[in-house]
Image (cartoon, rainbow, N blue to C red):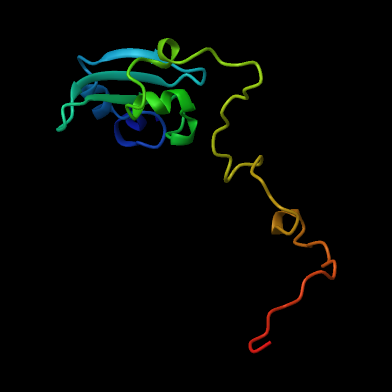
Length: 130
């Protein structure tokens, strides 16, 4: 599909119109997932506009927390300069896995056989007037 996919689709990467709109804007950084961040111009409230160009599918859960803070003006400078270094015990952010093979499925889910463990006897059903 090549260039036609870039012109007409929005769900996988950015469209041609987005690239035209980013002319003259400054690239400020890139995260570990390959998403690229831009800044430039001002919105109607006078705040600097900020963008993310996703590498791959356009899924907002793929934006790491530190860059989310930057996009939403919670921090002023890019995360590398504004935030303390990542601590050893911190785990990397995980994108939304819904709809993938790695999605969470509890024991009673149909994908897991649809059988739940039996009740333990400590449950008493509610009845009106009781």
